[in-house]
Length: 537
Image (cartoon, rainbow, N blue to C red; front, side):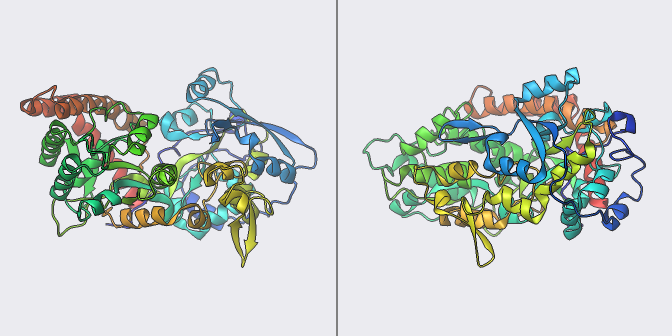
């Protein structure tokens, strides 16, 4: 099998002509044949600052915002974007919108010049491009985006993973080039509880069961009450979605190039039986399906739980910081990806672990009257100066150069107003979830030692069965999205009923037969087609 190709669903095929809002051929969509060669050989002129001599006003609608000290800020409130306007001369009106509002803008065709969002949440850009609402970017990139093109040339896998089935590009994406930037979440466990009970870090599902029983029965929080519920879950980062991996399966995974549905495998029944047993014995929180982030953190900081799935910074780092003055012994480590066999590494199947191109990014709409200027504006973030601006902010304020390395100032690392590193940095920069290439130097400074150690543990998981994010042509979308979502909803309902005991295990066979009747085999065939196409790219 070839080195895995990471294919972004959000850059999809469309027939967009000059009448869709682009002039002079820029942004037009011709045959995709030979586009890779054209892109790799293109030599656009350097974009000089300012981009325009006479100020040009444009609009960007964004579902992306930042939160600091309980306040939400739009892009225009961040110092990096204020500086961007000064450098480029392009005046941007930033419109912070909800996903529902953005859907309404598409429905009414009342579109801004550019849109920044996570296109996964909209089924990709495909349908909007097909409707002529988003434009192809190939020619614009070759004529107006030299820095972005250099990123693609530096690592051709990024270009390969951006191209749609017709070999066209529809998005300036958020790129995570290094694995450390992609492996930012996984299972976590209380190290101090393990040490207190003289327990080893679990490696297998059986090991985990013994540890959960010990957490439940031996009072690791030391309050003299058996009030521990070992496993808790934040519904935004569902524990069950990833615990399937411990049994070598996922909802959809591949084995030696063959796409499989985990729900149809005998390991899925074993997973259900195990989780039902753990739930019945009180090892899994009764509220695991509905627990929101606030409730999750409350359970964790009140020392009622010892295992969960979460992020290195937003979960592990946040919880350790919150507990540092309350319980200095409070300590979390990354939990290895478990397996059933002690002699094999567990499988890690989050697609983000192998996706170097994300579906977060900026698309240019057909309403844009100056797509060439928009392309130059987007390009800035991928050049040297833009890379520093969006990853680190304002030199002298949020970072300084030390031995050639951008280094955050004390304003960020030890904020005098008590802001966390992420909160302080969000006032100056947006080093994630934007159309840019994330810096490894951001990771090196942003992550604490315990967070980096957790990531090192998660990186050891076997990604050999992981399916990257795929993209689909028009005929495949009905199955890959609509039918899959319908079946997934049914599976989630039945899975939870079996685990909590509302449905007996004897209903399993009927449950699987219903999935087959709903068309799961057609979904697998469709994913296989897209996977084969990605591998052949």
